[in-house]
Image (cartoon, rainbow, N blue to C red):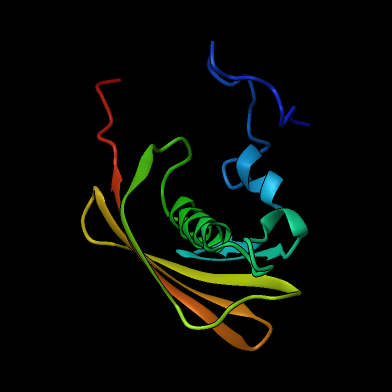
Length: 146
C-alpha cells in the first residue's frame, strides 16, 4: 500500500489512512496491529523482528516507545470525533525487562482532563512479562471556525 522507501524531502506525503483508527505507514513498517480500540482503551501488538533489534539483539527501546505511544493515540481516537488533530507533547517510559523474542502488546487507556488535554497510560507486555509502563500528555488542537 505504501512505498516505504520513497524520498519525502521535497513534498508532503501522499497517502490516506484506511480509516480513522488505522495504522500509519511508520506503524505498519514496524509491524503494529490494532487488536482493539474503543471507549478510551486500545490494545496493539508488534512482533519482534530483526529490523527492530538494537546492537546486542534486544528489541530497541524506540520501537517499544513507538508501540506505546501509538496504542495511546488509538485509545484517544476512540473517544475523539473523527478528524480531530492531537499531538503527544510529553512522554515517559519506564523499562522493567528486555524483549528478546516473540511479540509485545501494549494495553492503553486515554483519560481526558478537559476539552484539550488528555492523559494516556499504557502497559507493555512480552507474553505475561510486563516490559514497561508508559505515561504521556496530549494536546488536542483547537478547531477553527467552520
